[in-house]
Amino acid sequence: MSAFQDKDPRVEGIASSIRVVPNFPKPGIMFQDITTLLLDPIAFKNVVDMFVERYSGKDISVVAGVEARGFIFGSPIALAIGAKFVPLRKPRKLPGEIISEKYDLEYGTDCLEMHVGAVQPGERVLVVDDLIATGGTLCAAISLIERAGAEVVECACVIELPELKGREKLSDKPLYILVECR
Image (cartoon, rainbow, N blue to C red):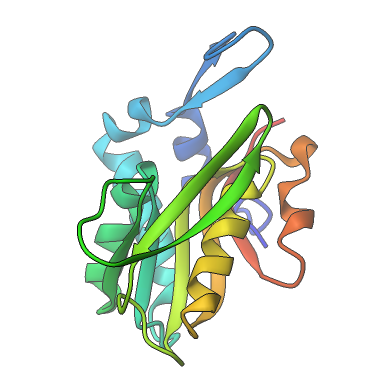
């Protein structure tokens, strides 16, 4: 599912506001830089508005944002739809009792953490991040939330890199994106 397939006219402005930085952070990577999108208040507002339009009235009680760019988009979405915002953080950033989920990266592993009790059994959760590439981060987020007994309703990302096949790793979890980069 994606907004660009729905031919929403706002998608073109969003896509054109994303800067592509060649060979960052390493040779061969075409980095999708959303900082230029954030500098364009119309494009930034359109991103938030499009997600809010999709998720309003869907009985979502939690928006979980993946560190760090998922916080940027997830927080205003949560406020607009009347849901709480739960940050999914990198290791050692949350005080108190946490649960964690490790996941594989191209060269090593990483981990997401969430406060114990941040989500409750039966809550309906939207997971938000800026981009899906290989899908490892979103899979870890889904696992973390489901281990707490909540239901992941959908994942939402501004950008998808379809050639990396991250969507396939999500199995049956719906993914909604605004921009597809090839």
